[in-house]
Picture 1 (cartoon, rainbow, N blue to C red):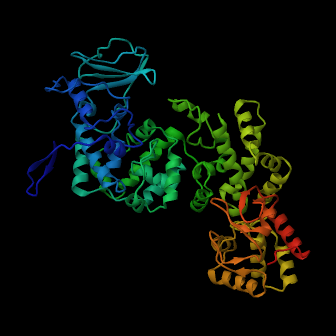
Picture 2: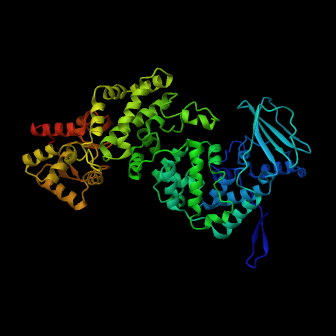
Picture 3: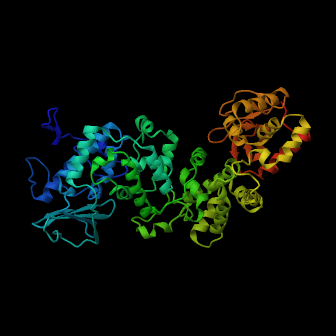
Length: 603
């Protein structure tokens, strides 16, 4: 029964509700695994095992015997219900899932699993028999999982007891953590959420957590809401209510989920086990979530160390690249190349991995083709982007030369990761072009542009006034147009995505200034005004147009060969985009040279 108060202040009772397995698994996703754990009354086994440990369980007529804890999933919560409590109190938690969590926490408070007088251990057995054993000192359980060829072990020692009975010695057993989550704390948290509603989301606290850990802002918001990613995936992962609370776009939150999917359920529980305040009421006080964020940051640093953080606009742009590597991890390739984050899904991850050894695995420690392709695709997509589309002084752009150096260093090794990564680089139709770009001097010239420091801070290589001012002056003199019009003409003449938004960002133009330059080109017949799907602009070069499917950009057919684009046989569709075949100053000059020769775009 769940206690609550009537309007007159007297105690009332709440009938215990039955939650099916799907509702429970969805509410606990990312924290408690669902394999074999829940049945039609998802909390019945936990209550029964708790009574068995206490010695108060007696089967009712027709009731089955107590079953050993299933797959070790809910037993991981012992001593660590803080993560579930934080999620239950978070504004972003779906109301129906909040009710499951509150009922779970209230039920948990009534079991010995929340009582600090009991001692619990988890481990593995060599035998192949499931069992339940109990005496005056405690109880132990063995669950044999034939499909996994292992037997799980769980034991409880009663208050005053010395050792639980067991038919065999475990291969190993570890003490369960004991942290936040006494019965009084759990009941108080449930009571406060039911009385006051959830804690208002604090965007400033999430930002502080991002700055302290290197997590993206959306990932930090998820962690602060007790939702640090999920290995399992219930669709939708976040609904409209949750997204509106966080204030981020669906794609940004999906990238954050992918960023956090590097964590195991056990790591997520451990991360948030002790971040709740001693008095749960502190959550509702001013700065309550800021204090939680500080404790999470300390726990994150202990688990994973602090990472450098990309600027918000850079991270958003990395999301749009849509690589298999999450945006935060892609940025880490350039921010801290030697220690680049291990992306989710890497093969042959050893688990459990002791904390002191976790730093030994980085993005470069590829173990299979998928790993290698993930890293290679991210590197060869991210490097041209960092060079051409990020401003001078951006830390991701500034880190590109060191990333290239480290990439080459890994490839030059004689170990297995080097061979696998090399295979990933040269595999497929793009492989030889990637290898040539990396080794024929083109990559070196791009890196030289970054290290030269010719661009003033905040300026873009995609702005020809910044990277090739003499060329802009030549276009002005030759065509008799303004500097703004000459700048825009070179950009639409060459750049793959000279969308209105990009042009204004690169050039620091207002919409009015952009419109004036575009009108000048249109009046001179150097460009045409039109509306085309997925172009993001209304000004185009005259001549044929090549459509493209996401994520490739559509472009004027004339300039595709200049920028490494491959078109279909009839030139109507973009089939692939390779790396830029030169630096932007070189390519701007080449495009202008063709125009001067009379080989420019024509209708």
